[in-house]
Length: 265
Length: 285
Image (cartoon, rainbow over all chains, first blue to last red; front, side):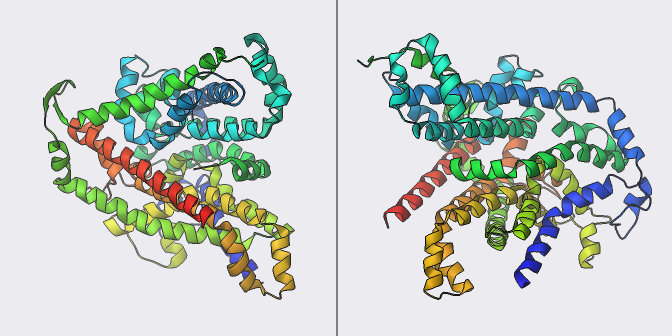
C-alpha cells in the first residue's frame, strides 16, 4: 500500500510538466505576472491557441520539421537496412574491416565535431537547405548493430543471398527479410524520425533564414518571449507536444519491446 | 558453390561508409591535427606548436570553470537520476492493472523534446514567480545564482533521461526468469529479501548501462544550458561543450575548438572502453 502511494506521488511529479504546460497554455497575460504563481488560469484564455496557429511562421516551421524528419528517417532506415543486409548475407573481401570502420564511429560523438561539420556543410553550400539539416543524421552505428542482431537470428540457409544476383537482392530483402525484422525496422524509423524532429543544435547552426528554421528552434524565435506574450508560446508548445504524448502512450508496448531487445550502448 | 566475392556488397555499404568518413572520421582527424598547429583566421595552418594549444586551454580560467561545472553536474545528476529511475521501475515491476497505468505515466516525459522542455522549465523556474516556490513554500530567485541555476539544469536533465532509463530498467526486471523468483518463494524469502538478493543482482548489467549513458549525457551537456541559462549568470553555468560552442562559433577561437573536440572525443571513447571492460568482466566473473 505504502509502495502504491509513493508510486502515485512519483507519477504526479513526472506528469507535472505536462499538466503545467496545459495550464500555462490557457494563462492570460495577467496570470503570468501574478505572484505567487498560479496553478490554474483565472479564466481559460483559449485565444492563445488561435494566436499560436495564426503566427506567420508556425505552419512553415512545422512543415520544415516534418519534411526533414521524414526525409531523414526514410533515407537513414534505407541506408542502415542495405548495409545490415550486406554485412549479414553477402560475402565480400574486406567485409570485417569495413564493418569495424562503421561501428567504431559510435565512439565519436557528433556534438564534439559541430564546428568542423559546420565548415564542411557550408563548403558544400548546404546551409539553409533540407539536405544540410539532415546530412549528419543519415547513418547510425548503433542502429546498424541493432538490425544486424535481428538479422543474425534468421536462419542463414533459408536465404543464402550469395547465390542470387543483384536484381534478386532487392526482392529477397524487401519480401523476406524486411517483413521478418519488421519491428526493429519500425523502431529504427521512429527513432530516426523523433531524433531529427527534436534536433536543436545542428539545425540552429546550419539555418539562418526564417524560411528554413525548424519548429524546435522556431518556438524561441517567434518573438513571444521578447514581447512578453507567453500564453501563445505555451499554446504552441502544447500543439507540438500532444501528438507525441499520444504516440508515446499508444505505442508504449512496442517501444518497451524494441528497446529491451535492441538497444546497446 | 558459394561466390567468393559479391561485389554488390560494396555498393550497399557505400553510402554508410561515405557518411561516416565525411562526418565522423574526417572532422575528428582535422580537429586532432589542427590542435597541434597555430591557425590563421581563414583557417590555414601557420605553425606547428606542439602542445601549446592544450597548455593555453588548461590555463584558461573560463575553461577550467566549465570543467568544474560539468563535473559538478555529472556528480549530482548521475546518482539522483539512477536512484529515481530505479525507484520508478521497481515500483511497477510486476504486471498488474495499477502498475500498467502508473507505468504509462512514467514514460510521458519521452514526448517532450529537449528544447520544448527547456522552455517550459524556464517558466517553472522563473526568477519572478516560480511555481516551485509556490509548491514548496520557498523564496528562491531561481536561475539568478550559480547554485540555483545548476540545480534547475539538473532537474531538467533528469526529466530528459527519465523515460528511457525507466523503460530499460523495467524491461530488465520483467525479463528475469520466473522460476528464479518462484524458487525464492519456496525458500521462504520475503518481499524485501527477494528484491535485494534475487531481482536486483539480475538487473545490474542494465543498471550499469543506464549509469554510463547518464555519465556520457552529463559530460557532453550543452543545449539545455544554452536554452535555460545561456551560461549565466556571469558565465558561471557554462559546461565544457557550451564553452566549446561559444569559443568555436562566437569567438572564432580555432585553438580552443580543435583541442576541446579532440579531448572530448577521446574522453568519450575512453568511457566506452571502460564500459565494455566492466561489462565483460562481469560476464566472466
